[in-house]
Length: 274
Image 1: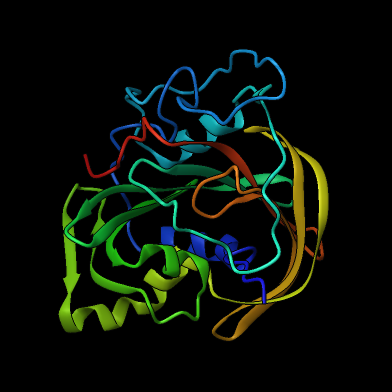
Image 2: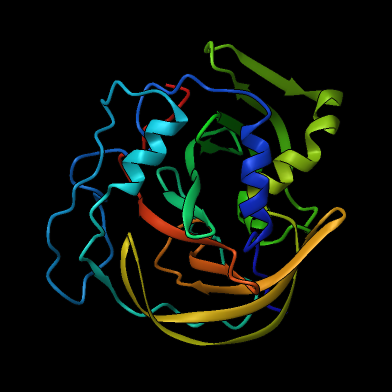
């Protein structure tokens, strides 16, 4: 069965994660003036975009949301996705992959999420998940063995989290490892995958335009996701052109919550832990 991941649960999870602690962010969530440094081959000539600089002195979650809200949508166009018909192949995950999403509730931006592979230590990948809301900002890193499997399925036990770090608003970093990781299991799993998923259909999704650009030949996935006692159904449009989650856009069935890709790339990511 095709295994999608974090389509909807991640939307509500990002808000609860942000409430865990605040983060003094040294940079805006987006990394450069020119946007993605290594875009896929383009089907049309792109125009320049206006992206907040990583050297911005603004540190609040509110400033990050404002910066993303004021972005000029990219005019880039990306070729059709590879066919999506079975479990996603994440064997191409590599250091430098990153993506930025905005979460909308009632049509208003409520959360900005960034995720990236920021390094590798021995046989473990260093994965970062940062979440920004109007009132809170939170950064989390974890060392994960078999990251490709961890991203592909919330139920796959092939992944192994060796440690987790959370950075607070004073810049203090707390590291969890050993038995302490047990308390953080739900949080770490949701940051990787967003919860369990049950896919009911996969069909051609056509062309989808989001702030990151226009994606040709996407795949539309209908699914039901759950996280503990909560669950929700919805649609997601995915493209293998996008690293990590592959999600271009997702919408809850009732239309109240959605998530859109803001930017992505394979180099140039600025970690909140640097």
